[in-house]
Image (cartoon, rainbow, N blue to C red; front, side, top):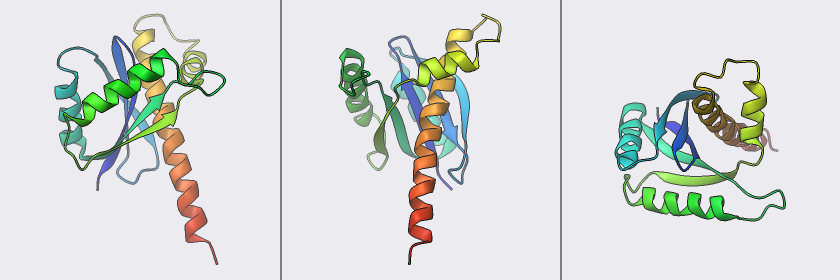
Length: 145
C-alpha cells in the first residue's frame, strides 16, 4: 500500500510527516534541511515509504490570500514536481495556524530542538487535516443512498 507525504516548507527546514499505509494517521519524521540536496532527500522518502501523493501546506494570510511565503511554497512545489516521479500528485492545503498550534502543543517541552519539532509537528497537522477530509469525503460516498 502507498502512503501520503506531508510537507511544511520553510526557508531553512522542511517539516515532514508520513501517513500510515491505510491513510488514517500522520506521523512526524525527522525534518530535512532545505538545501541543495532537498529534492534528493524527498525522493529517498518517496522510495522508502512508497509515497503516492504529497500534501504541502500553503501558508495563506489571515484573509485567505497568498503572501510572499505562499508564493515561495508554490515555486518550491513547482520545482519539486520536476524532480520527482511524474505520477506523484502534489496537493496544497491551507496551513493557517498549524505552526501556532504546533508551538502551543510543544509549549511545555524543553527548548532543545524545539524549532525542528515544530516543523515536523506542523507537517503532521497539515497531513492529518488532509487525511481527515479525505476520510469524511469517503464516508459520505460510502453511506450515500
